[in-house]
Length: 249
Image 1 (tube, one colour):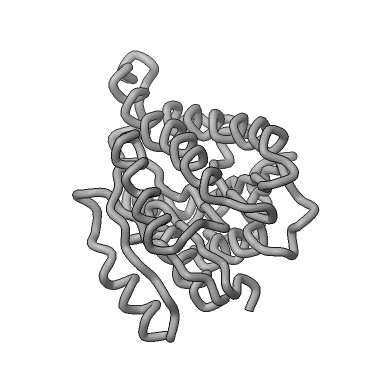
Image 2 (cartoon, rainbow, N blue to C red):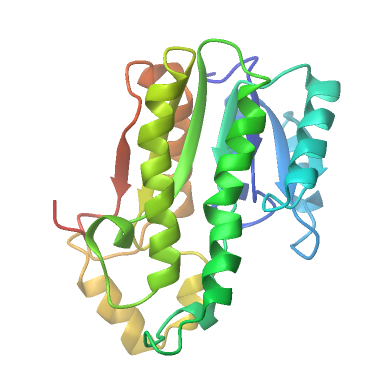
């Protein structure tokens, strides 16, 4: 087991890629903190699936964009687990209303809403986690391919993820050698956003990917496991693309 005896917090893990990461980490021996904020799907299905597999998990409610809520979450983690070894900042905000907008229709409120979760939430959770971490710990952030190469849609989301990439590179140097910090940059992974697409749009996305398919959440979880564990012990400050060859390098 690659995470045996480790304590891992996965934010935004009541659904989607975060839930897949939480389940895989548990299978690899970690005690997992499943985080979700009010209004998101309840974490019980994820907790139950982990426990049925013989794993250990607890749920901690917190809004990662709220400093007080984040502080309370880490106090609870410290009280229940006595520390933390791995943080995956999987919580993110992307909804259909943010796509397909012209510059004129993009509002400051959108920027504030998305940055509060994706950028500020990543910062607040990393700040809180590091206080509970010893040497050999790992932080794994989540970004997106458009933050690296640009796109015609999702300006606000990509910009927030660009901030996460910069934060990753800065924190990797600031926190070394105690804590490693890396980032996963996702291309087209088959999660709920695919439901926004028409059949023709989905085919257009697939045809632009050299591997001719969307990525699977399980593949994102596998990358998170690699970056969280000892196999990547000499890797920090890196942005690893998971995109089927979609973005030019």
